[in-house]
Image (cartoon, rainbow, N blue to C red; front, side, top):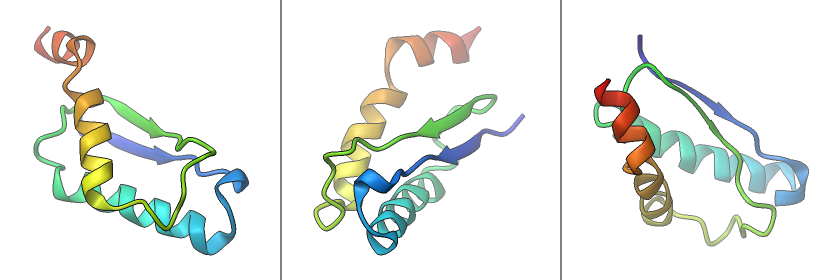
Length: 80
């Protein structure tokens, strides 16, 4: 089963333009790394409310999400 993605970007992030920018960058991360992400999981990404939409970029998202995806829990579950 392929993985699925859910994005929950609330109004505390900012206006619709800012929220859409955050969602675009997050979707782009998952699109570029779709073959590296373990299958069989549903991923729900909820950005922190203090995130500045203008400062978010693909490099920042890669740094944060790769560390989460490579955590011991995820590796352990994907090898069972």
